[in-house]
Image (cartoon, rainbow, N blue to C red):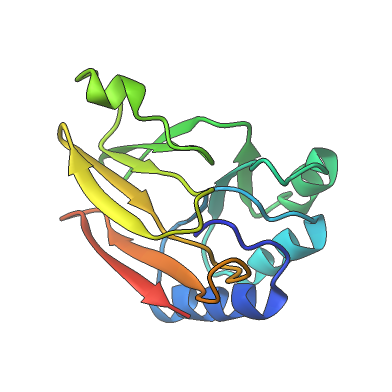
Length: 156
């Protein structure tokens, strides 16, 4: 998920969806905006990995909100999960991928508020769209199966 922009109703719907889908990990590609919005993710049945977005000015408060829930860091955040290498950023970082430097298996980004899924040079590139729905009026997240890299963009 990405760009939740303090929309508590949408965040709660996303949490319900992720819990019902029995997700093992939730990734947030930035723009929570305020720490109170990030606190909603404590209701997840799994940990969260996240990066700060350009609208996340209260980094100290967001970091505190993540205590016991997972990890939030400056982008890019790289990690391995389920045998896959993930790279998370708020802004898309296409340059190394387009040059053929395979730094990850999955790149997750946000910022544009538009869902987009594509493969480029062996990398699955995912923008789940805007969970908050403020810009386009459509709240979306993405569900990814890391085993086969199948993905579904879901409207909340």
